[in-house]
Image (cartoon, rainbow, N blue to C red; front, side, top):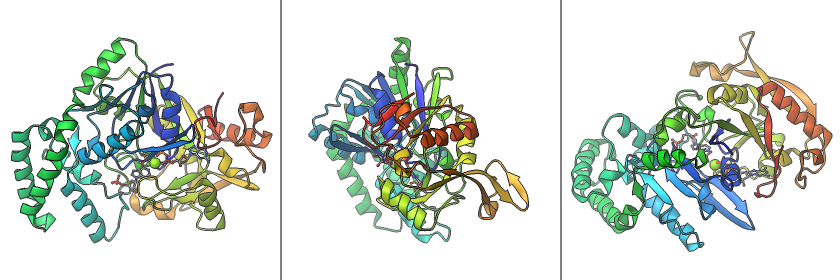
Length: 420
Ligand code: GDP
Ligand code: IMO
Ligand code: MG
């Protein structure tokens, strides 16, 4: 196996957790490089189910090293909760799970500011309210608190006081009480947390030098990327593969493969443009069969047809070398299946998402229609087992996105995975 990055090609929830966990078996190190616990990566195997939010999906393979890179925004309390859940399930993490000392922390006031901003906004983003945006804002404004400072008693006291002072007006609450609450929460976990803090850039460089195999695990998806996504309806980081270098602390060249995870249809949770959205019985059928409810917030996901404009764009932005196509089984009972191949806007056909937010609502998807296969794919164990019409669908997506489909996922369980 080569070092590989796993990225979402759509608006998140493509099945990254499942595929990272599947590939982790053959890897040595798994690294998260951006986002935070806004992510919800579902892993199902041997009758067990886990949702990883902050900890890499490789953690469920007992002998793997897992790193949380400098590019992640890190909620220490949520980390300890997730860690304890894993420990209770029998997974030992000490000595193989490390968090970058440069990662910026998400503190309770970031969550408060996130929720308050969403509540007051006329044009809501529909964030996960985990404090992601405010924490990245502080980082960019050079007001953030790094993990190395969070675990240092004196440094944290000083930085917390200064931060609360500067945010007092926006927070509009009893700052003294909030400060005590933050200190109490922090003091309860900091001794345990210290065991996991390290310079993960050095750990990663050493692993690569030793020819260890690394999987870079993205959160969110390309259309939620702050530079390349449907701005402003995006997250506050760069999920694209290029960010794997910066967010994990290595230089370009260490990644040889980039696998884009694409759902066989499209979903989106939160607000923002979604040209192929189906606000009808077909969309509801997708949601029901696909179990399309947020793994982090429980919100119903919006559903629609596969958008080849989006996935082809993701192929370019991420230098995809292959696609893992997930949830093909969800389409087993659809007589006709549509695929968006372009957008009509003011008489012209667009082959990429426009940059101007006021153009989004004018986009009319142009579709091709294929025959559904109307038979079960969930028990297929090889590519040849798939119905001919399902193979035709996959071939059409490969042609439209200009990337080979290397993995086909036919069910949520790890075992329901076909490698071509
Ligand atoms: P992630 O955020 O990209 O890791 O994806 P999520 O875990 O948020 O959402 C994907 C959902 O689809 C989870 O409930 C998975 O268990 C499920 N899933 C993944 N692959 C498949 C598949 O091939 N078929 C079906 N039916 N479900 C899948
Ligand atoms: P995974 O890794 C789907 C969406 C939110 C909202 C926007 C901004 O599980 O694929 P944020 O809280 O990041 O400021 O919210 O991004 N969003 C996701 N949607 N999957 C995710 O992660 C997401 N993480 C954030 O719904 O629209
Ligand atoms: Mg998810």
